[in-house]
Length: 241
Image (cartoon, rainbow, N blue to C red; front, side, top):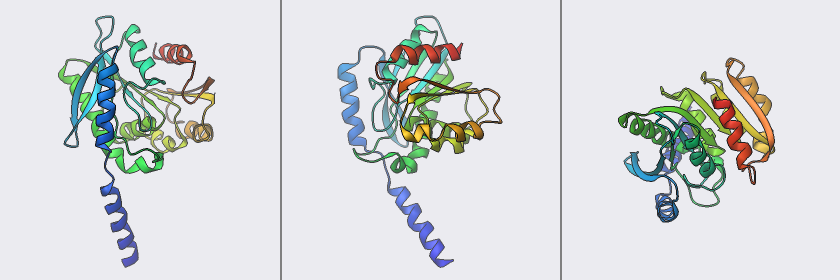
């Protein structure tokens, strides 16, 4: 028993010591502000830390908003998946709010981010609160790769207003959270996706059997939808309709 308690204490201390790389976030923020072509930079707050987000209004007078969550170690205007979606959806009747998620130093894999899931939850909640204060609706949550782990964890563990969820390149890890998600889910991945995604397709479907509005779609693409932006946008837009 003493050994078990000691192990749990050490584990909790290790988890508590994992904090986002705020210096890296600041560098990303500076780069985004210098190169941003579409949308406006706003600053949100979570975990006593200010973080960057990009709000892009719909071309129509819409209240429904898609919150966009990027993948491992990047930023909310990342050229693969994130930027194409956050801009294109404004032509489909959605405002978009793309948010900076916690990042760690280069070389840390997705497993190293698990202690930051609560931090990620708080950032998504901050985005929801911002939209509510603006009189907008947090209607759709859209996430890519590691961002889908953070997002499914959030949906499974927090009361929230999202009516639909799109997970792009969701790894096997998300299956444990999908079992607690009841809103409509699009599980989108490529036939040339990475092994953690392809190896988890059956388990994700099994864990979503309770959800009659869970849809799994495979398309001809890799994990980052390189040269397939139109396919990415068209597939998601069709499902959202």
